[in-house]
Amino acid sequence: MPWYNSIMFKKIVIFGVGLIGGSVALALKKLPQAPQIVGVGRHSNSLQEAYQLGLIDVIETDLSSAMQAADLVIIATPVAQTPAILRAIRPFLNDSTVLTDAGSTKSDVMGYARTELGPQFSQFVGGHPIAGAEKSGPSAAMADLYVGKNVILTPENETAPEALAKVTRLWQDCGAIVSSMTAEAHDHVFAAVSHLPHLLAFALVEDLAKRDNADILFKFAASGFRDFTRIAGSHPEMWRDIALANKTALLRELQIYQQALTEMTSLLVQNDGDALHALFAHASHARNDWAKSKIQ
Amino acid sequence: MPWYNSIMFKKIVIFGVGLIGGSVALALKKLPQAPQIVGVGRHSNSLQEAYQLGLIDVIETDLSSAMQAADLVIIATPVAQTPAILRAIRPFLNDSTVLTDAGSTKSDVMGYARTELGPQFSQFVGGHPIAGAEKSGPSAAMADLYVGKNVILTPENETAPEALAKVTRLWQDCGAIVSSMTAEAHDHVFAAVSHLPHLLAFALVEDLAKRDNADILFKFAASGFRDFTRIAGSHPEMWRDIALANKTALLRELQIYQQALTEMTSLLVQNDGDALHALFAHASHARNDWAKSKIQ
Image (cartoon, rainbow over all chains, first blue to last red; front, side, top):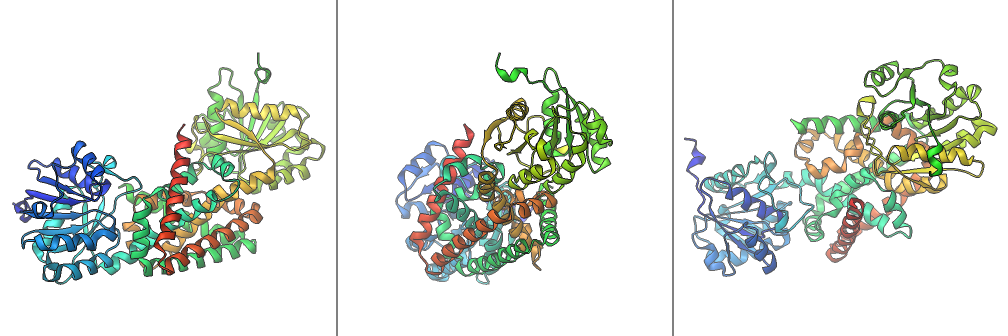
């Protein structure tokens, strides 16, 4: 029997039962021995909706009751709420409860956890499930959202091995592929491959939507525009929090990207068709090779 | 009987039997009285493939034969080849043959046609089918590629009404929605909603692909990156030609966009969460409203 079969969740508390938290709940409910899932959140409407959709078994507003005998707490709210949640639950946190989160930035979250949890920081494992999130709310939750997706965990030296094992098991139970790296490495990678593209897409849509002829522009925008801007339909509050939380890495990415655009603009000004062709061909091959590797 | 029912195509000549030309061919082959489709191209491999796939009825290398009794010539090659093709077919062009193209830029094409065709410029109608083109080649062709898609025609004062009517009918037969505007207006609209996003996507992929840690970046790039960069998988030669052909409008768009990025960067530097949230929220609403309007 592999070691992780000894990990059993009986009670899981989820803060934020939207797409991310709700999809974990749905995945766990498919297990042979599904845990009890307790939902806690800011919006009683969302909690009611999550309850009616069958994502959670119990709505809990009393933190003491919620935390009692909890095996695992998952914080799946916008990242900016994480420190307040950690602070609020700390008084009710026993030594056997493991904490994790699903935030898209990790250095800030690890810092919050260290500050708020004190010696119980060892019970916290930062996590980031890499799954599309342009839709939000309990109704967007899907049991298979994480199947075959990457989840990155960011343990530190203090992290208890049992805590890491439990959170690893959580995501494996959801069908995910679990990796570990430092919070700093995580934030650099995601500034480049996720946070920057989101800001670029928001900027393009806003650039066009503000114009006098926005109607005609949007009329003739087609499938390329649709896919390019899909991530500009993402949750504004979440992306404000991500941008601010990963500000340093993101500013560096913006600077590098603006430089790349400036160089591309120079090629165009100089009518350098060969260099433009080489650039487009290299990018096109890299993109298509990547897409093929992801289909496997 | 509506006027356009009197328009019948018996012989159509297509230069460039890739995704765009091949999809026209497949759509026309579904008509009750399908025309004969003659393929002409640079690559004998593509022509053979198009013939074997059933896109074209005849491979023609002799332009005199190809043009004989042709009702319609469709130029669906990369735009830069258009003047050479017009020059080559001019000696064989009778007065009843209508010419059109499928290029993504129109001011340049209308200029080429005016120069190369002389008094027969009246037989040429510029056209641009707005349909995804990140895949290319005969095997990418689809009979329904244009169903419900916009096609823009760019007639000028000299354009013969019968020529405009025939090209309109061509695209209606393919299931498209046909609009008209000036070539200049077309090029401004598409610089903003298509050409700029393509360059932004190429620039992002190239930016990441050149780095030492490209492997790890691509490993964790997910669905948002996939959609954002789909258009970076597009045909490099085609996009070099488009960028150069629509250089003036595109440079203006790049400048406006860089300014927008600079302003967004300032908000981030200033930790102005409220302004970032307002920007993201406005863009997100605009993008989602647009996507809803396109589903209708």
